[in-house]
Length: 578
Ligand code: FES
Ligand code: MG
Image 1: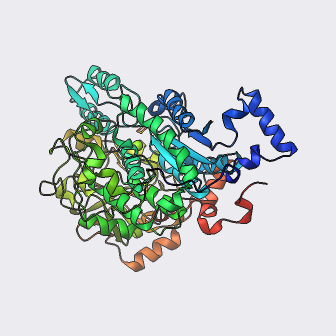
Image 2: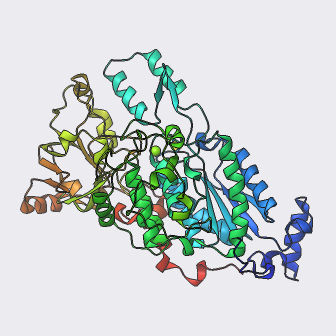
Image 3: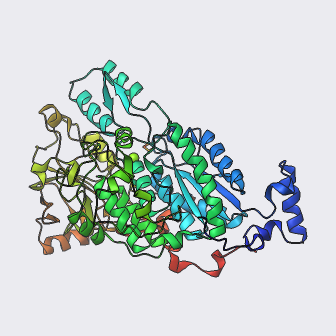
């Protein structure tokens, strides 16, 4: 049954552009005619903005050129008027220094496109890592009816009769190459086989984590996040998404009706059960704050203590997103979390999360585990605090060598990325397998942009001895496809004088995952002396967007959003245009 219309055509936002009798509306109509549309094509219909992050340089979104046509087909069928609005594409493999520097810029672009043009509702087309949170953050701030169309994962990588996983196997075979275990031709075969179709990374990296989170939040149609990009069902999902947004406009179903503290708890729980990316912590906190919902690191840790890791997906497990889809996908996984989700939450389908997953089945118990046979009974992610990270740090215990859960070793400190790149493979580096590698100046302001440098490389001489994991600490993030005992997002970051800036070579550092602690064994008096001697590094930008970024970006524990984009800073001047 279709819910009743809550709006008349005259109440549509776009009516102010198209419907009124004045000179400006004449201009809008005559220019729409210039584009080949008859008045009947749009008059009285919801105008649906399709914010498309397609780009020639975004390998994960190549199919969006076609998919957008399928979205438009659905919009036309349902009686809407589709308007494609290309937005900055954040292409994870190509954009320097890191796409994270630009997440908030895409969020701003999304919000301002929706505000400044005659949009009644929007379809967000994203998937590659930061595009998902960016698009959603912008749309949440604007709060028009919004539906998200995920890019979908690419097919499994193919190599010598086996599978390759995005990112994870890059790091793995790069280590083997550096250790001398594989040759140049093998490495070339990995290069040719690891990304062989459209779609985002097909490990449980940031992309799969965030599109799954968007689905659990209720922002996609049921099942949308798990369909591989080249599958014909993905094209069908695109057209269904287009159809649905038109009804959402008439129903006036907005993000503020969908996003609640409970829907965010659901998303966090799902991310944990998926063995999802640590990046989800930063993004979900930022997204929640845009919706005026207080989500913090402590909530992640609390939910992690009760949520089992059920998805056997790389980098924590064995399989890839294509296998996950065939095994039943996200809907099936959610049926295995009884009591851990609030199934009464509203979604864009107009039905509850519980109704959306009704009838979903698991077809492969090794890919989507039962609770009894979970990959981990709890602790997919853990939040640490201590004198090294007073406002928190995170680690992914699911994807590390378990012998390192409690470890003390002497610090080997690199003052920035260039210092690390210059010395890490030096035969003279004083490092053993017990050392703790520390990287400074890699945070939101320090790097800047908090790049995915957190999986610090294992020194070459240790690789040759067979060492594959060590305790590593930084204020950077880590790619969701990475693994290792990497303590990330150390807050406050070293660039602003956080204690990470004060660590010196040889200081004993203790990681204790079970106690949720990260500490250096240096007494307070000595730390105070070091603090007095510490000098802030120079700012990295003196003009352009970078200056805006450095002035306004927050720390990792609050999601790295810009201060002026938080809801309390909404003012009349960011309201509806005249
Ligand atoms: Fe686009 Fe990984 S590179 S999702
Ligand atoms: Mg990534």
